[in-house]
Image (cartoon, rainbow, N blue to C red; front, side, top):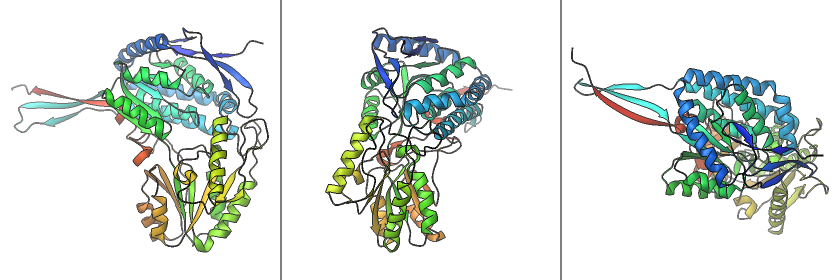
Length: 480
């Protein structure tokens, strides 16, 4: 049986890399090989960049209305193929099929949002002081964008960047994760079928460090956008800074959850557990550090752990599955090491704490109590199905713990007291705060981090701003 190949998309064609190099794409639920993924080398990257330069000329020359029509048609095609796309996503990333369907739907929404916001780009005229000149501020596409996206939400995170960049009139060289390539490629196929010119989006895979170095340094690239870990984000931002290229960085988080003593414990636990273990906790805005008022700490900890232990873990294609595997074996090893280190440092293992079975990258939903604040797992994002809990006495103590890390992406608070909601939400130093609620990123809202969690936003009416540049044109006013 011939192994399916996932190819590069360069110049409007699906092609193999010039070097012939490739890697295997693994199903994290059973560790079977799904496909062979072609790698791009320098020759392929230069071809993709030349294609994207042509694509920029063609795409930016179209009216915003025409671009929007193509993008909306693409979004509709993606929705019509949601089941096939979701299946491909699940066998590559592992998430339950219902979560995969939700991701595909949101991806289409982001493309549609970019299409509509692109139609609202407008120049403005400013009268000069004596009325003798017209001063017009034009908003133009920034150019060819290098977009680097991760494996946890491979389709929607690529769509966020594509929706904004294409809506602004830019072309894109997209490098999705090598671990989850298939569904992204299917999304691109739908966009091209909808009328997107073949040079406008080029898709490459390969050795991530080699590709990012080549793209960022190349003069064709005028903008870099990245979603991923803090260390990699800092590295890429530094490289872009050396060549004066603007970046958007949506990086990791280590979200605090402040639980006040006045909440209904059962209701709060039911909501909090569902939120925590979505996508196996592999979410940058996932709640992670639970800071619970001491009076309710023990019952909250016990009930949270009991409910977490009831989660059905299994293959994401099984409709009964509530939580799938981790995305790769590296996450299993990293989480096991961090959990073991926390227990050795004095944390209390209440439930979970280890891999499930010998096949597939399954890790039990895990709850740790009394976690030392200086332990690695409390200061470094675990990015997995692990909930960390500590008690607090006064509100000031809770905020000090919440703000005691360098991350600043998301935070959460549960309380029935309106005043406490306002003061705690104001005191948590993050780009987004969920009050008695979870947070999901939909296209109509801006999401961005503070501190080490990045800079710039994606979504909202601000979505296209990072992909536009201003030009001031000053001309004399015609004399009557």
